Length: 252
Image 1: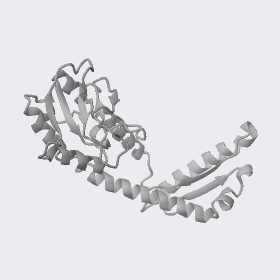
Image 2: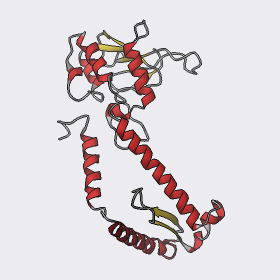
Image 3: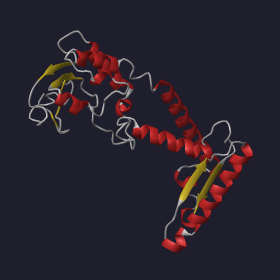
Image 4: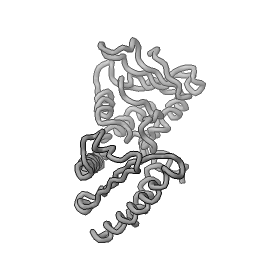
């Protein structure tokens, strides 16, 4: 499965996991309330014994994330040693802190929904441009259904090709964001990074992102990607380079 869907297996498994979890979510308001009450009871029982058993104190908030169903689902709990924590430190009583918590959750849910709508559109055009550039050098690996983002370095190296003028501030292929537990390949790029990358591919000047042939790439003696020069106000003097072994330097 991982071999067949090299660039997508993590996303597929994550989607499957979310679907299985949704199957267990109550469909009606009464069912949601029942599941919430059961969860609240179990958590309270577990946390209540921490001070006696382990000397741990705790405080937690619990609320539903389904905007049109979970308006009445909210709970705050504190062990005796954490009593009045939210009132003292956050200047908010139980009802008020639950309200802030729900507002925070609903805001994140809304932002995630917007991201999902635009997720497929933010990388539009990039794979097409890369396909054109690679085909100019007799390569067809950029024309598959799945964009070879994670496999781009070994593909470039085995073809003895170098990407020149990779835009500054755009994550290199093969790199992963520390904040992402489930990397999604090119979809991990921000919209700003996608815009920079597309602009570099469509540039008509010498600063454009282009490919040139070069030897000694597989042994990592020569860089596979050479980044563009940093902007004038950057604290970096030279552009970033990346080698097939995923090592980088600032000697571009």
